[in-house]
Image (cartoon, rainbow, N blue to C red; front, side, top):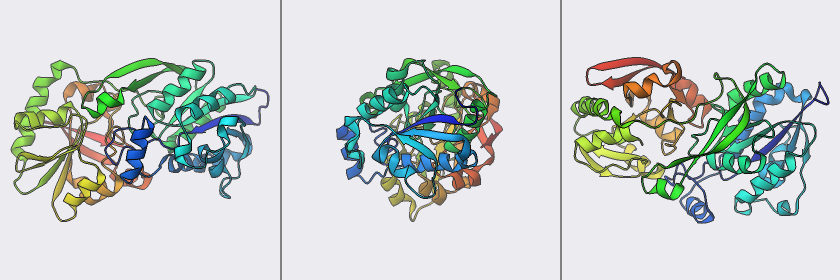
Length: 383
């Protein structure tokens, strides 16, 4: 390091990341999908996620200097009075106009990464986005510099991301102070068109060098094996027997929840949120607005299963469950189901939250029942 008292951090914000989540579009890859998300009322969230991170980094402000992107990809946030970090803004003809989310493309991320990686005193490159952003970063930098993802996307299956923006600050501090090593972390991405058609096709694109601490870094997603089916069917039988007439049940994404619908001989979108009433699926692939219509005057419960290996019950692949919805349903009406194999492969069987509302995450933490078989429940910590 050229200056032991000052660390240089590159920062790239993907401003459209996560916009497809609440409106049920399962991503925002492609301009047409972005326009559709905006038309459906999607709002940018990456700036809010970046703010959370910067607030946590303020205590180390005197020791940090940033290399950022122009306009909505960084500079408009750093120009706010509450963030008086030292920073340098990169220059490139492509960034002459980046004042609106529609002004940015994946090429902006790639050019920014190319420029930033060539700074001699760079210690770490941060990027705020999802798996698509991680893939763009990897395509440019490979394993040449340390990188770290701040989760803001819809599908965040790669292990290059922290659990959330707040804990990212702890990981960054420890790395800059040489307290933790670098590790090759997986960059995964999915085919969004197939994803919207109910098929989860995940591909490995490569590895980024990331600061490594299992306490703060998420694992890559692991799918459920076919051998889980018998266990899932027994769980489904238990859940079906508990369903009460007149109560709406929101079934989250995943193969474990889909088995409930299968045993009822009802259709279920494997990657969407569907609504069950009186043991019949009455609406499929709901977005936030759809869900809110049902829960305004009705008794509603949520049934979810954690993401394999990562352990997230909210915040990864099911952003249709927005903070507003979760608050209205309340924690007492959340049912968690998981096969034994899936739960055993989640570190310490600790389940995770990243609802995009840190106060809600705090209020939801605690011990929860997890249905792991027909006649077996395990108590797990959710944090």
